Amino acid sequence: MGLTFALTILAFGALGWWVDGKLGSEPLLLIVGALAGFGGGLISMIKQVPPARGRDSKAKPSSAEESESD
Image (cartoon, rainbow, N blue to C red; front, side, top):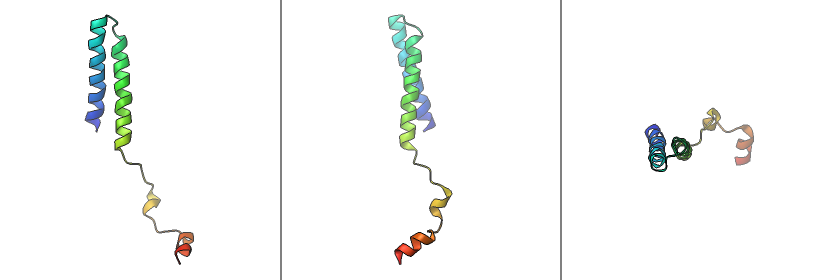
């Protein structure tokens, strides 16, 4: 997951650097590409990581829940 995040930033940054070289707009598109890669990598990472569960998720049911099941 971390490697994917880093490679996404590097790939978009490299693409921006290459386009900057063609257009002569250095370093504008390098920065835009790196930021786009960061955003895309972050979104990808958020989608891959399951939501955190609290310590209480494995605890016994509360007395209110027990009385409802009776």
